[in-house]
Length: 247
Image (cartoon, rainbow, N blue to C red; front, side):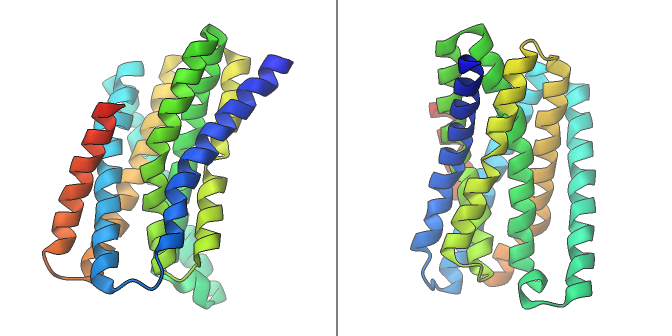
C-alpha cells in the first residue's frame, strides 16, 4: 500500500510540476504587444509540434506499432473535434464573454489534449516503478521536463484571451493531475499491454497536433502578419528538437 501511494504521488508531482513550471510563464505576460504575443504563440506552437512529431508519436510507434499509433492519432483528432463542437455549442447557447473568446477556447482544448497526454505518461511511470524504483524516478524526471513546453503552449492563448495569469497557471497545474491517475493505474496493472499505451500516446498526439495546426498557428498569424511569427514557429521547432535531444 505504501509503494502504491508513493508511486501515485511521484507520478502526480511529475505532471503537476512539469506543466506548472511551464504554466508559470503566465505571470510574466503582463500586457505585451501583439507582435510579442504572436511570436510567443507561434514559438509555443513550434515547441508542441516538435514534442508531438519527434517525441510523442515516435514513442507511440516504438511501444506498439505504426498501425496502433496512427489509429490513436485518428481517434485523438476525432475526439478533440467533438470537444470543439461541444464548446462552440455551449458558447452560442450562453453567449458569455469568457466562453465566446476563441483564445480561451483554444487554451481549454489544449488543456484537454495535455491532460489526455499526461495519463499514458503516468502509466509509463507507474509501470516503471513496478520494474525498478530507479527506472520509475528516471521516467518521472524526464516526463516532468517534457511537460514544461506543453504548459507554456497551454497558458499562452489563455492569457491572450484575458483569462488572467493565476487562472491560466491553475489550469496548467490541473492538467498535470492525470499523470498521477495514470501512475496509479500503471502500478496496479504492472505489465499493461504496450498496444494500449501506443494507442493512448497516439490519441494524445493527434489531439495536440490538431489543436496546434487548427488553432495555435492561425491565431498567431492573425495577431501579427509579419515574418516574426513564422520565425517564432521555426525557433520553437528547433528549441523543441534540442530539448528532446538533450533529454
